Image (cartoon, rainbow, N blue to C red; front, side, top):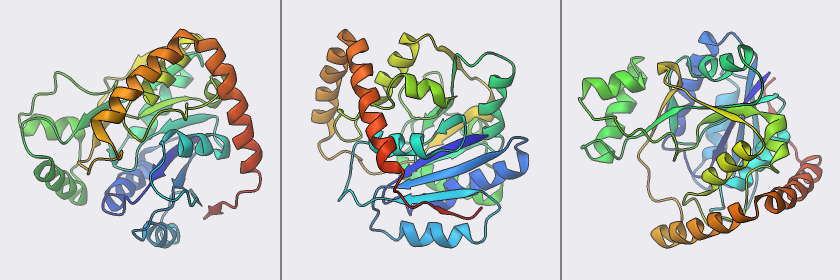
Length: 280
């Protein structure tokens, strides 16, 4: 079984499109999977929308809401998702990622033809780039999704947008065995806000324990990162600090992994008392 882990915080604007593309994966995927939504305490009726959606969808959805009092490091909800997931293959996406209709198959299939020492990375494009304004790109994507014609690669090709520098090294969209995440102690929670480097840490740590990387070039594994307002509170300042934090951690990677393992076990103990809403 696989678990798609979807952290959200005030993503009501994007959720209908994100969930619709995941719903289409229900019909194309030949594997058993669940969608685990980790809500960090949204104040924009995200909770009401998800609970209503759970009553009408074919998807197996598990939903957990926390009240962290505002924006938190994305590593925190990802770690709770990691320990609450029922699948042995974990697929991480963001609350503003729209995926191709065969995305789940594309993420899981490589694990059945190769060993489990693998991380499958998706092709992720940012709709704020490519020569047209973010809001304009976002509107086009949403229209295509509703028409059932959404395909990330085709969308870029039709608009003649350059894709020579895809951003799969910067955005969160990858699949990995759950046991491997445990071996590195989960996602490091010391980084500030949502401004990068936490994903770099995970990739370095997984490589450190011997994982090989499959940077998928399949259209099935293509994702578009919808345009959205700035996430972290301090922007460039946080990104600069995170870069220095990452450099320090990589110099002591074994010690940091052991420290993170302890923190992940603490989260696992807390998770035993968390109420999870499920429609299955």
